[in-house]
Image (cartoon, rainbow, N blue to C red; front, side):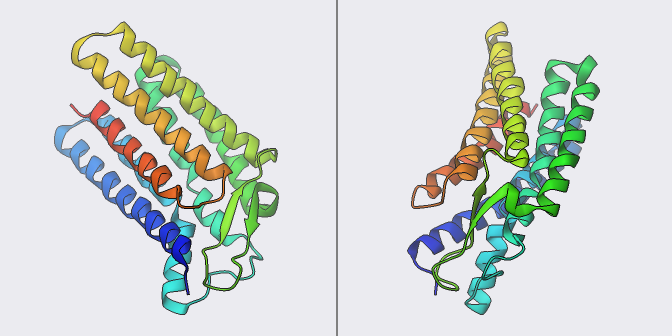
Length: 236
């Protein structure tokens, strides 16, 4: 049976997946309604970002239904793969948004580079997940959810660092500079986009590097907040 931390981990992961999908579909709906094409990409980015907790979410459901973890002992790294398979498309769509707003003439050069890096990342996590992630079995089946974190100095870990640093520099710092160069409502929008990008990367990095405990509640709330910050920065 799940202990307290297991429930916290499962409920917060479920919240991220559900709200990420709901926010994403809502943003896509708003894009169609307002003809704001870039909101489509934000909707997709939110869908993919929410699904980055899919492995934890499914492990939680599996424990609730069967009282044991989806994979115990961890042999194939399924929980990590099901979660991080969505990182690459989330990064590509986020990079597209930033490049479209900041460097529109060069956006496809930047996007293509990250598509190539993302393909490499996906191949690595599928072919050798244990080099990409550190896995830890629960003390006993169903007591906690399967735990995993990024192997910081693996090739996959380095690629993830490149992804997140690019988001922080291109979107976080880029939008912040644009905000200082602008005025009125446009300044506010760029500041919101900057904060949303930094929240997404900062809380995502904390989640990826450290084991979940009671503080995971605040980490995942911060992660969800990034969706709304970027939405209010892009809505017309």
